[in-house]
Image (cartoon, rainbow, N blue to C red):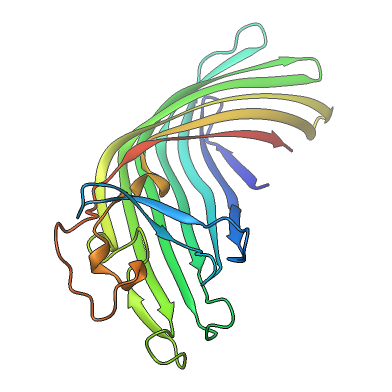
Length: 296
């Protein structure tokens, strides 16, 4: 659930200024898997492409009978934006009015994809901590000039409109990657230590990455309303919004891994990387679309 607010100021019978803003707060979804590491349990294996041996490989999240394991992946996103348009009305005909629109549009999409794991020892081994985090966060901000048209009608108490708009401009992409291991295995099971690098977010691809690319944001909207009184109308509407050239968090994961550069893959500190500097980072882009049901 979110909200949309529209404000209109009529300069004269033909010209007006419209301001629109909307926001869909952050929501998240997650999935998890676990294994007890007890007799009869199934070992959890994390697959990756090992560049040091040039083939698929796995690392154990649980390993019977030594340690149990669990993993959770969480995805969240939020969407918001605003626009300001000048509307110029053509002469009405047979209850229809056509407005030409021109203005500026802003859009922001924030997403995150986080993988966390835990692989502590089973008794009678010492109680320990072995937790990893791989976080991929993206932010896409669009700034563009917009043109469009709106056809509105009135039939007695019924009113409605069809709107088509398209904006062209710049998409500012930002990808933040961070991974680390938290463990007390190297302090004789005492204080915890933090080591850089999880399983997919390693020193070679971690950090903030930004760039600007050209993008388009079209939108189509339908609305039908009923005038309860001359000053009050209830309405229901539907809109479809599409944005090109956005950076999605899951698509930034590079499965080409050099496991020698992090403690997470079982290397004793301090690590001594050997072989290719992988994973590297390069922007992967796709599109994003949102459908909205509006009631007001």
